[in-house]
Length: 112
Image (cartoon, rainbow, N blue to C red; front, side, top):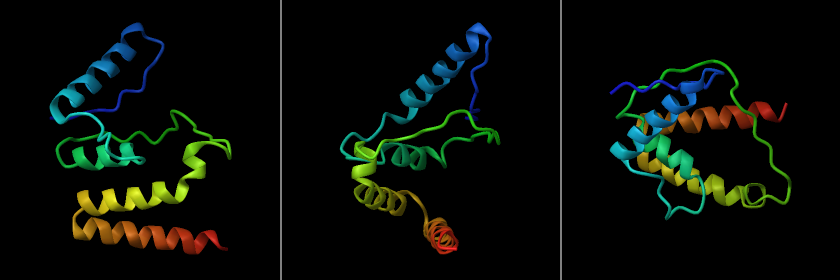
């Protein structure tokens, strides 16, 4: 099953096609794990990553911002801990090692 990320355009049916593709994905693989308190999206993407094929578009389709009072900002440490537990569950040892290396390098270079 090949899944393509469809960026909705002005055309009337493109949004409907996008939603239909997501409905097919949810029907086949289930929904988000609502037992998680955060990082539900990370868990979902990693759960379906080896069972689907995605097309990467190198464009920004949305921006996200959060106020300091938002739960995602106030509970950032909890989110990071949950996301790491999820990554450990769904990534193989090699993928997890690469993730940790990239995370280390990003934190290292962020200091400079």
